[in-house]
Image (cartoon, rainbow, N blue to C red; front, side):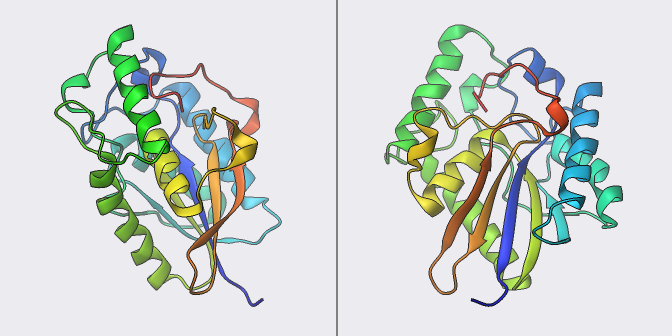
Length: 219
């Protein structure tokens, strides 16, 4: 097989909303905490040392936390980050700004329905799983059309990157029921010529051992 595109879907670094376990999804959203900045720098170092080959492009969602993360990753890679519209977090509607147990459970129940295949389920007053896929998957196909090979890093968000990864590669038995991705953890996909994507790695852990407490989105 010839050289193909690798796509690294990396979660952004920790934010104050993550610390408070608050559902915070509207753009532009919060920036990073001190720990979040350290996580982003550690992610850059890990990506630069990846034996799979150099990162050839670095992009992020339009959210402030994703753009800040990409900006801190960039020096280690010698790249200037870009922004890809449509790759922001799931919009939670009426749950926005909430961190009470009932709201968090509503969010998780809706995400679980998506993972089980019911992408018509909708966040109250927010997006359905299909809404998310309809904006996110074309953005990935745009990256695939622009970058035929090499490694592209897209800094995105916990819930949306997990949903998209499952949609592209199906259920992953090794994960069990817990598909957690910590801040600056990542999912690595490999383009299959004319046949979608395959899973290369599911890195739950934050880079450099800089883990943060699990936040409201469970990832």
